[in-house]
Image 1 (tube, rainbow, N blue to C red):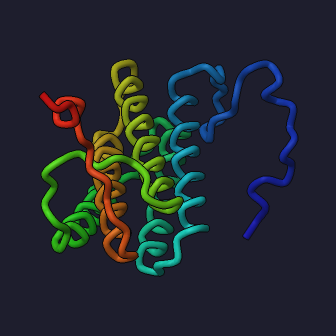
Image 2: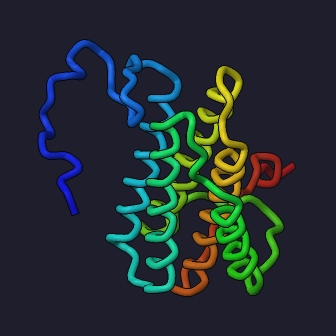
Length: 186
């Protein structure tokens, strides 16, 4: 394999721009660059989850997601390419359905937390939602691959289900929200 990044400190971004894979340069404040950063942040927090979770089936799912997110980042760096395909969405949708099968039905919202592992998966879910919102904003200005939008929407659902699945696998209790209305005694 050739060196992709032979020089890390380039100084080319000192003027507030960043290079895209197609050779163009964008302001670091550009919404496309913002989306790239949020997808990168999501990938990093999923990497943190991989480092602290011990269940191999969950680790395998998260590693697969990390590769998908690199595909999404590569697509965002090359606006003319559509690297995310329906198969990406189908795969995580099937996983979500499979993992959700044996989970108890929800009767109330779940408070994020429970353990470091569960809290980090909840963080990944919320970062995924933020990345999705940014991609929706980008789509109002430039055409975005609709599959990429769909992928992030489904991924946040999968991360929620994966959190519940991991809680059940590790015997951790979920904490359900008690609204102020239900906590106040008349």
